[in-house]
Image (cartoon, rainbow, N blue to C red; front, side):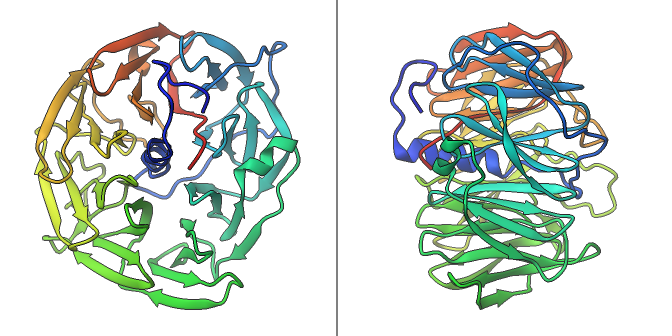
Length: 399
């Protein structure tokens, strides 16, 4: 990353935090893209922008300057599309119904290759590798994001799950690959493969496994319907929820903290549960703490700050800055108007994206996008866009 909105230099730790913050966002139910066409291109000749942000709207993508938030270009792309950083300072992964496409956000052009497959799911960045999981095929693709610079499809590792399912995978620094286990009907846990894709570990004590996040010391947590499963130093450890059904489906991690931030739901019969409690899971002690914030939130509300702060965007319109060690809310930053999570997970709602010291928050009801300094609480700038946005992401390098 060349600069932040306040011209701060990124540190390796801060970049890793931003990576973890964003990679854990996913809906409570199985995610899939629908009705998107696989052909699109910039509507005008693009001028390259630094540190771009990308936001989806009904019909395409907005590419914005990362400092001024000025709209740099509009790209037409019909259908419901999802976004994740690719892992370098130029590219963003765009999920369509046909697979993962790679957008050079700095130049506002799609590359000439894609990772085809139905129901493209989670995108995870860790230890210098980016991992794509395609739900419809169970295929896992691993690549070095620096290899995207040439405009050609990177050579990388592949693995195919025993059966397709809504899953996730992450490659560790030592080359081990952790990938979820399951079928379209039932998800049970995770396995670990060595560099040669030979299974070396397995744990199926994680019903409804969903989502992942990495903490300090390369402790990887994956969510369960009854707590969290941690993989660290070659061993699995289960952290039980205090309730028989205590679902942690979305998590955010930080290299600066051993504590993972998670959501927490207790009603398996709810059409849409709007929880007010979050979970803080210490990967060193195996302890789980629940904190009631007095406001609900959505799966796009979780993030981590540059020093490991836990961040939560509430439906009261406030960004909560939380000490993960104590669970104390240290700061409340008003950002948007009050809102309610829609029943349909694909419908727009305020979304949090964190990069270095800056929290970017969308406000679809007003067609606005805001940039907030996490430490000072100052709203740095706001813009109004032509249409309401849905997903929000950007380039994040150096993970």
